Each structure stands twice: as C-alpha cells, then as structure tokens.
Length: 383
Image 1 (tube, rainbow, N blue to C red):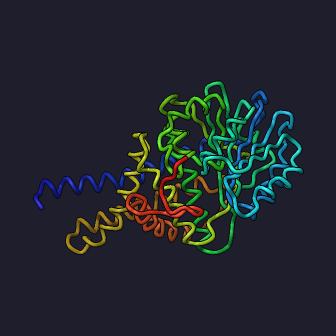
Image 2: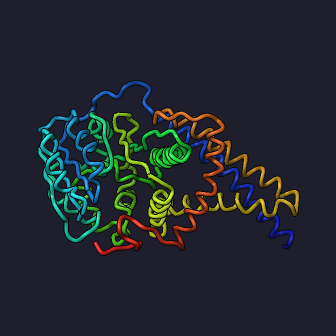
C-alpha cells in the first residue's frame, strides 16, 4: 500500500467517523427542538378526510383496529373509511364487514381488489375516496381518538403531505425491546430529516396527503412494479415535484401503534423488504444517506481485522466505536421521551452494538438477497 493511498484511506475513515457523530447529533437536536412545548391548538379549517386501509390476512388484528377507528373524535360528517381487502384467506373481509357496524361515520368495505397486491388495493381505495385529504394506515395498527386532528394540524396551504409517528408496543423481553428501540431510531431519524428538508423515509402506517396531489403523482412514482414502497416512493416523487411540501407531525395525538414482528425471522424479512427499496431510489439524498450509513457500519465491522497490524487502525477503530456509541446514545436521549420509551445506558450501549451487525447484514442482504412477504417469495409482483 503506497503512502499516498494509505493517507487517503486514513483521511476518509476519519472523516466518516466524524460525519456519523455530527449528523446524528444534528438529527437528535432537530427532533427535540421540533417537539411542541405546549399542547397544539387547533389551527386549521376542518376538511373532509378519507381513511384508506388495505388488508391482507389480518383477522386477528382487526378487532383492535376497528375499535380505535370507532373511537375517533373527528367530525363524523367530514370523515369516511374505505377498507380494501387484498384477497385475504382468513375471513378478514367478513370480519371487517361485521366490525364496521360500530363505526359511526361512512364506511365502505371493498372485497378483493384487482389486480392483487397492496398497491392495487390502495389505488382502488383512492379512486373511491371523496375526501379532500387521504389518511393511510395499516390493518395491524391502532390509532388515538384524536389521530386525524394530530395529522391534519400540520396541513397548510404549502404542505401537501404529512408523515406521522409510528411505534411498536412495549413488551418486556430483550428482542422486543431492541426491536422497539431500532424502530424508534428509524422513525425519529426520518422525522428529523423531514424537518431539515431532506425527506427520505415515510411509513405507510401513518401518512396523510392531499388527494389532488396524490392523483397527480401516481404516474410519476418510481418503483411502481416493486412489491413494497407505496409510502417512500410517493414521498420521493412529491419531494422531486414540490420541494418543501412535506412535513412531519410531532403531535403525540398523531401516534399510531403497529404490531411488532413476532420473531427474528419475521423481523429479518420485514427489514429486508424495506431495505430492498433502496436499489430503486432515484432521490440523491436517499441514496447518499443509505450508502453513508451502510459504509460507516461496514467499516466499523471490518476495522477489527486490521487493528492488530498497525496502531493507526487501533486508533481508527476506537474513533469509530466512540462515534457510534456516543452518537446513538445522545440521539436516543433526545428522542425516546416523545415515544414514551425508557432505556438505561447499558441497554442503549448493547443495542448500539447489536445494531452495527444488523445494519451490515440487512444492508448487504437487501442488495443481493431475497425476502418473503405474506405468501410471496419474490421482490416484485405485477400490480
């Protein structure tokens, strides 16, 4: 290795470690600063809202979903629900039809959208929506009574899309606690990036968009033939067309709770499915941040193999470990309270170490591996 090449590598790795620390310091501060210090007052003109939910084999989760939908406090004359079944085989459609009786606003249950697939189901729901705004959530979620107000409160004449907070329920075992923490980190970093004007992450379990805007974007969304990504590709298309029109609701009333993966296999496949979207990104910001995160964690795992050869690599390894642990710790200190989650310092350190291996495995598998979703083994499906 020549002296010049060695020097370039050292400078690059040093800059990478510093950048990771500084970026997550910035994101943590941005998130904390965005949280309202006082309860949010209703400052918008109530609009007609359509809630759209696509469902496939979620019978066990539908009672909790419909109970929360029936408890919504939004003006029932301005609210409607469109529930679209995506070829369920567990009786979801029949159960939804019976549970819908408790919903006191307009409710339309649509069986077996055609063609098959979540994106087709959502498209079918949008086509039947009468609201000025569309609110999306998933069939395995529960929502707060003031959810609609929490999301619509961020809509302004300049805002076309609002992304909302999502979390997993608390379960007292290490796997569930780590998965919850990992998910909080994902949602919180995505929220902070939106706040800074670099929207790259969204979650279809909690998303609001102006209907006219949604219809105008449908033919401009990348990854239309991809199995997943109805949320992120829509976000990227809107950012490209209308920069600055995307906001995040830091209103706790907007929080949606979704079912956590039951085991490691489910978790692994879900994250691979999410990660596989990155190959289809056209957003330069999304590509750069994804590559940066994967590169940092890959270097962190590779450095120990060189640490025994030269002292400089030992120093770099220490720098990477310090950047990772300090950045993650301070980031979570600034974000966890919003989600009502508490962790001690040992849990945060251990989770940070596990997170390093997880990022590298998921990141590279997303590029070269495959995943399973419901009864599909393929990355793509015709929609």
